[in-house]
Image (cartoon, rainbow, N blue to C red; front, side):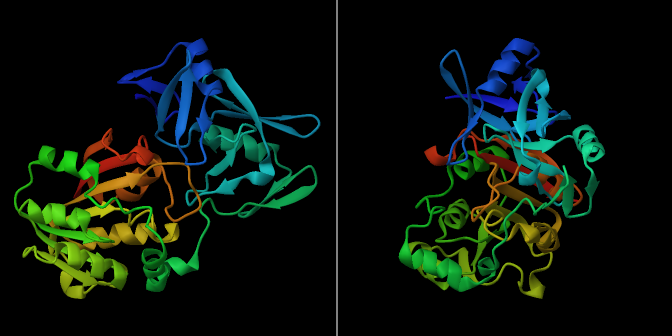
Length: 340
């Protein structure tokens, strides 16, 4: 499998080198596609290449408005596609997101966003007016109230095989943990599911507390791993944990919790991580990075994760993992960071 990155300025990068050949970059942009499974890829000379974008697949550098109502977005390598302004959304940082005529997700650069505002007839915090028509601009992530109910998660366990259930520890965890060479730690796993990751930590000598919202998930976890003495399973809402847990853990492991909660609560979750960690404690996270605004699981970007964590944590290790289940290849980011 071949991979290529898109950096924070929207340019292709191989290793540490940015693709500077304009023709080749344009070809990669032209061939870029997003599947219904949110896999991002391109092609060159008939070869499929998995794309790992720091932000959205397209970062718009300039915006143009043509007579007749046609809007154009220019990306790096002078690649241009049209888009419909009525389909734009806004993220928490007031950045416009959309999709091109080829259904490729994009985000405006600051320069492009300023140009866009100048071309509008009128705008408010939640609307834009174009050619006499006013459009609501919804939030980037589509919200769901039922995610805060334990019954929602229990029902999934009882009626289907959960999409997050690997029946084994995360391959990214299995490959990352030996590299970190961690001493014996007090580990907290939030949203532990049936306990596969928590058991892996415990089997490697750590004292593990594993938490889930679903009684059904915990029942299955205890049946599989209840015999492990240094592993405790507890039923809690991750947003209502015991006060005595403050600064009680050396490491918090994140995997499929961040992507499952309502995205409006992600900052709250990050603050909980920091509050529960002892001074100098660490987060080890495996995050889904894919252009998926409807969930669960919700996607996200490296850009977003960086924004949410940088005020509270110092990044020590940050990499896209090649060790993913087939359906997640190119979509998993491993982050190891220390509490500030």
